[in-house]
Image (cartoon, rainbow, N blue to C red):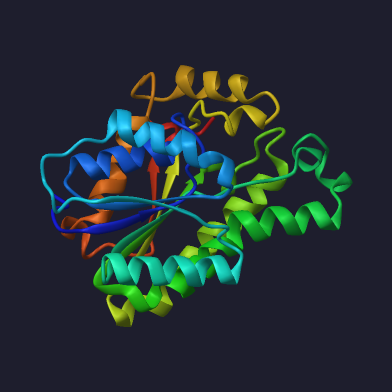
Length: 260
């Protein structure tokens, strides 16, 4: 499905990251992938994951890693240069970057400082703009950009607070980008996923309670949506979705259709 495609996957911290599972799926579908990580100390862990879990007999199918802070202009310029010199172009970009200081996650919204608010929105939302701006010269017509979100963008979840605002802003940003980039043939969509038990998610107060509520109430009674999120991501990167842009796709076992 993705043979000869080049995909940039951001936001990988460890083997439990949704982004890592997406990278594996894209690789299984024959894409070449560039994996970015934010801090140098992640490199050995990412390299080990690649060695253990990504194998291919196709010499044309490449895997690269790059340390990049997605809101730092110099990092993005270096990433753009690397992709241009190594691959020549980019077919898809997957945004899975989110962060909020623990002081913001563990406090009521009215107690969040301006600094923590700005940090959360800068990393979790503005990074989609900064990445897109840096990668746009490499994106070919019919290429795609996909961002990962959560139902908390439109509904109240206790203790999700500041991240609800960040995800709502992320979805709105994707919508505006879809309109702005449509004439260039670049598609922009959002996957709104059910709770997934990642290390980052565990930092959200009472996350397991939130996850168990989803498992109990969703119509499809799925134990996990990770495989479905990965499949949707691969589809959005493929030519099979070339008429889809500006959409928020719920991958949550049907939870989002419930009235209560």
